[in-house]
Length: 112
Length: 113
Image: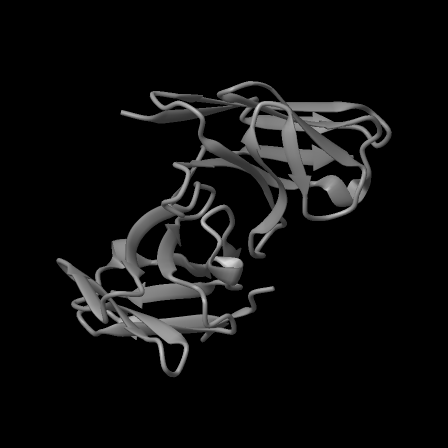
């Protein structure tokens, strides 16, 4: 069966510091991968999605970037965090062509 | 692009009653409509979905109905229990794409004991 991992689970970072969040998927090949952000009490905002290694589509212009160095690895980064970057970051995967998305456990980021 | 509107934003029901959450979408090419349940502090979980070739799908106490003509779909929960309390999100793919989902703004369901 498929499993999706995210780490760290929680993170407190000062404004201006860098960020690296990692997501890995097990039990499937060539998944579509997604990064979402959820502000407190709000909906799901799609940040990036990837259909293959090195292929990244950005949905929202911001100070975040994403990379997919391996088939089942997706990384979210920032060079300098802003207060507004605080939130619950969720990675998701889907099988190409099905539309079904499955979420990882999430990383709760607090920028202070 | 796809626009998904979800109503109501909050819903309180007595335990044992039914709950209905409705979503409308704008893109007539959309063909897949999932519902997610998110408990406090947890990840969204896919609980049921429907594709455009059927009008209704049931799974125990939950069901989803789809009206393609009116471009809306609804989640129905019968015999609600306190553990049904959560935020529910609907979604639809933009322009019939299988790559992305546009999510509704969510409904906070509270089941009162």
